[in-house]
Image (cartoon, rainbow, N blue to C red; front, side):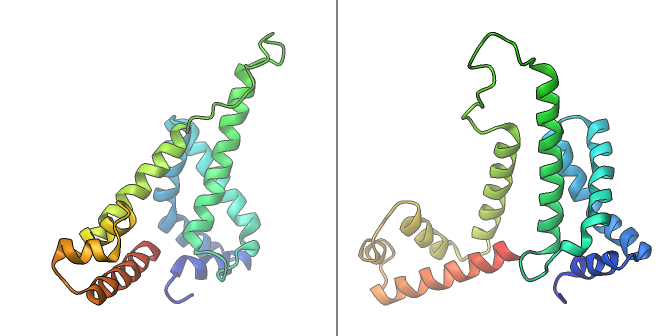
Length: 182
């Protein structure tokens, strides 16, 4: 919990600590507002949703388990789920049940705006983590895991011994994991 200050706030909020709730709001509201705005695409509705999200946080803070997730991840999940519920409710208001079209209620299999935004955010984060690796090692990791090159192919490409390729990949993946978890 030492490396996750929001977890400490959530534990205090679970005990009814209003000061901790204020500190949690100050620390997390900007990011959660961004999540709400990205999903709802309407500033006023996102502001309203954010307040409802923090009401849920106040009520459910005791359910947070620091061993299962980081506090910000838990908060984002609450905000995301709440906003998706709002979008679904909005869609139900627009589409009456008797449209006559049996396919009107079928979900679109294409990723929605929220899924695309989350994927872009994750891709940007992964790219930033790749930038922390030395260029040759980043290229080796990309070659192995994105291009499907073998260790032997990578050893030839980089003119290094086979065991060095293995070391580069193992250390590169560990570094990427550390970066993505922080």
